[in-house]
Length: 399
Image 1 (cartoon, rainbow, N blue to C red):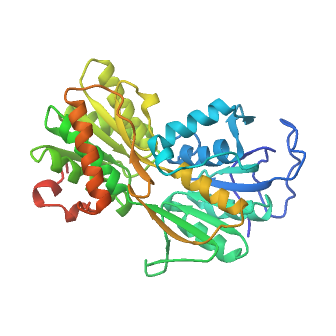
Image 2: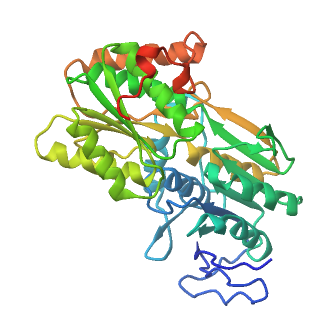
C-alpha cells in the first residue's frame, strides 16, 4: 500500500513521514541525543484539529507526552518537564478526583511518536506507518473519525495493540463489536453536559442560552441533549438556541456562530465543536471585553486560560487519563482489548472548576453537586438525544 500525504512525525528523534513505503526513512535529526537505553515507543495519531486545539487532541498529548513520557513539546522538539510542571498538569486535570480515586500518575519511561493527519485519508496509513516503520508497541487514535482506520490497522496487525478514544468499533450493520487487540473508550458526555446546562439555567439573566455544535452526528447530539435537559432542570422557562457549524476545524465559522447567538440574546454559550468551538469562545471573550455580562462553556478540556474572564466552566473528558492508563497497561503487560464506557461515576467525565464569581454562586454549585450525586446513583437518567426530551425542551431555538 502506498503511504502518500503522511503527516510530520512530531517526536524525538524527529522523523518526517515517508512518502512511500518503498523509501527508506531518513536519518534522525540531531536535536537531542538518543536515549542510552532502548525505550518502548508508543504512537499517537491525532484527529484533524491537531496539536494546539486546546481540547481533545491536546488532552491526549498531555497523557502521552507529559504524563507517560515526562516531556513537553517546544520549538519542534521535546524537553523534559520539571517535577513541578508535571505535578501542576496532573492536579489541574484531575483535581479532587485524584485523591478520591487514588490516581497515581508518574512517567513511564517511553518514547512518544506523534503523527498529525492533514486529511482524513491520512488516518489509516499513519497508523500503519507507526507499526511498520516506527516500531510502536501501542498505537493511540483519538477521535471517532478514526474508527475505520483503527479497525483496518488492527485486523492487518493482530499482534499489535491499539487504543481508540471516543468510538467503539462498528460492524457493517453499525453494531458495536470488539477485537482482542483493540481497547475502545467512549464517554457518557451527556452527564457532564447536564451539569453545565443546569449551571447555565441557574446563571442566565436573559433566559436565553446558546449551544454551538460541530457536525450533526449522534456524538454531538448527546452534548446537546444533556445540555438542554440540564437547563430545563433548573430553569424550565429558559430557551436554548442551537446552531451547528457542520465541522470541527473552522475557527472563523465558529466565531461567527457564537456572535450570532449573542446577537439573538444568549448570555451563555456552550461550545462543543472542536476548533469551531474555540471561535465561539473568542466571540464570547470579545463580548465580555466590551463590558457585556456573558459567559461560555468549553468542552473536552478546560479552556479558562484562553478567556479567563469569560469561561464559566467546561465539560471535561479525561482523555489524558485514558491515554496514560492505556500506556501504563501496555508497559506493565496488562493491556487488554474491549470497550469501556466512562461517565461521572467512573471519573471519566467531570466539569471544570467554576472560578468566576456571580450572584448565587455557592447555592448554584451546591445544586450541581446534588444533581451530580443523583446522576451517579441513577436517580436521574440523562437523555442521549434531543428527541428524548419533552417537547418544551426539545424544540430547537434556531432553524
